[in-house]
Length: 450
Image (cartoon, rainbow, N blue to C red; front, side, top):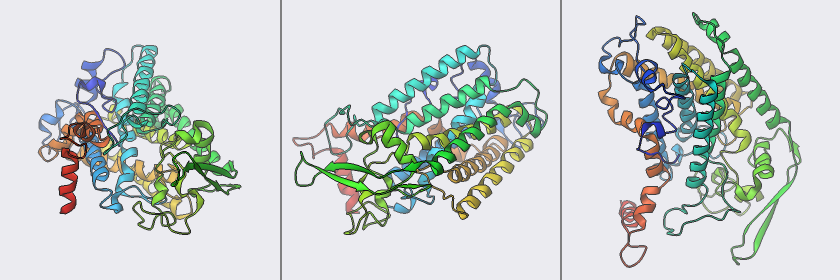
């Protein structure tokens, strides 16, 4: 992932429960984020202690744990490729980070928009927040910071990467916020069926998005295409590669509809230049890590591909809406056991469905954000969230999680400084006589010796 900021909590786009759509801060802090007692009256159960008097601590812990996983896979993924993102089909530890964040955003939205005095004002603020995230994402991941060991800054607008992590979160947040503001009934919730009825139009959106995604992924015709990269012998010359496709329903790296839509809508020059499938056996002699091309490497191995593209973001929105449902359970059910039950059952069903779809050919794939991938990761998020809630908010075991709780409350700051390399890039700007003489290079050199 990338980076976050410490400033004010209402400026943290991943701490959506703290910035209410209107002047509801006190209500959010005092009632939306309370940990109710098992009798449903609002206190802590089973030794909840102070956790019951403030925020929904489990949400901060879950967010902080996700940030910790993100840092781990970013820093250790090159050393331990097994925890790095799967080169294509399959699931690794790193592949849970993005859906976990989207799930958390959904849960937070349900808490923030529990009570609304003005839907129009809430929508206006959602638009502003989404635009801030989009601009922030373009700045951080569009290419302005050229990375470690490169002390130049700036980006060629003709080559800027348009998609990215924060951009995807912005789109998912905005659409989920609009659904929560405008698409819910006014009936009281007394059971699981009445909960579904109250938010039936939101589930209709989930169905429409899922059908649209699957129809496009498996129905669009993908023609032959080509791309170019700079030649190794001349900086001005380009090397052109042609990729043969002419197929439908292909979910391989070369001929999928996800990549085709991004190439035609965003432009291939605006896509991520280091595709994840470059770590596949066909493309790397060091697979599952990056490495030199094998002699018989296919032509598509070096083609740009964006893991946060347009079509794949459709199912990312669905993950956010699933998290919204889990947040509704917090809002409408006050008993701990009811909450746990209404979380565990759908989570288990999602996991079973996702793995069953993978078994029958709809592979779990993070790069394409397949429906099976959405099911497995959303189900895992639900079970993990329920477990953290059980430990932290029900039984009050906060001491073992105090560090990740703090990380969750300052997620944006950590994302910016650690995952987006802002801190090491900043430190590299201070050197002795030569740019190579800086603390970051020295630390990496020392680490490699051991």
